Length: 264
Ligand code: IPD
Ligand code: CA
Ligand code: CA
Image 1 (cartoon, rainbow, N blue to C red):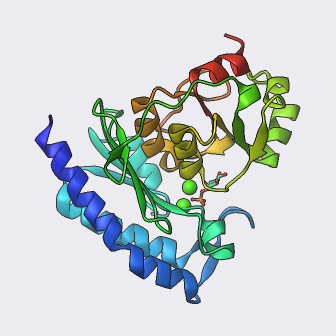
Image 2 (cartoon, helix red, strand yellow):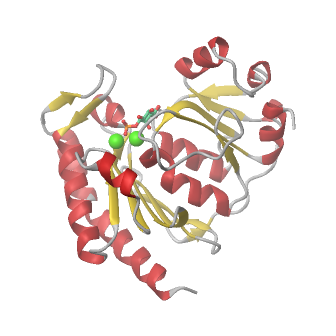
C-alpha cells in the first residue's frame, strides 16, 4: 500500500465533496456562459471557478507537479512539457447538462506518474457519488468496492453512444464493425463522458463509444475502468493518448462486447 497515494486520495475526496453544496447552489443561480471553439463548446464562469479552486488545492498538495485543466490557458504548454507527475482536471464534465438540466454532471480528477494512471476521482455531484480508484487496489463508489461487471454480449447490453458519433462511424473508416453496434439492446446518451465510463464500470452499460474526447474527459475513467477489467482503446485499437488536446476517439467495453465490435 502506497501511503502517499492514500493520503492524496483522502484529501482530494474530501476537497471535492466540500465543493458540493456551493456547486448545487451555483447551478440554480445565474452565471455567465462563454462560447469556446463553437456554439456546442461552451464554458460557464462556474467551470472556471471550480477549476481554479482545484488547481489551488493541488498546488498546495503537490507544488512540483504538472496540472492539465480543461479551462486553463496553460494547458497546451503543460501537455507538451509533460512533467513526471501530472494531474488532469475536468472541473465540470457535462457543462451542457449543468446549464440545461442543472444535474447529470461530474468533477473529474486524475493523477498520473510518467503517463501511468495512479489515482482517480469522478464525483457525481448531484447524486453525491464518488467513484474512485488507486492503481491495483480496485475501484469503489463511496468506499464500496465495484465488482467486475458481467461480461454480456452486445445483444444483451445497453450502449452509450451519441447520434453524432454514430454518424461519424457511418462516414469514416475505422476498425470498428459499426453494424454490430446496432445489435445492442438499446442506446443511451447522457452527455457526460465520465459518468458514461462509470456506467460501464458498474455494468449499467456494456459499452461507451465517443468520437472525440480530450485527456481530461477520460484520464480518471481509464484508471477506474482498468481496475474492473473493462477494455479501452480508440477506434483504431490504439490506447487513448494523454498528450493531445482533443480528438481522441474512445471505446470502452466489457471484454465480450469489445471483441464483438472489433471482431477480434
Ligand atoms: C463533454 C462531455 C460530453 C462529450 C464531449 C465532452 P464537457 O465534456 O463529456 O459527453 O461528448 O465530447 O467535451 O465539455 O462538458 O466537459
Ligand atoms: Ca469533459
Ligand atoms: Ca468540462
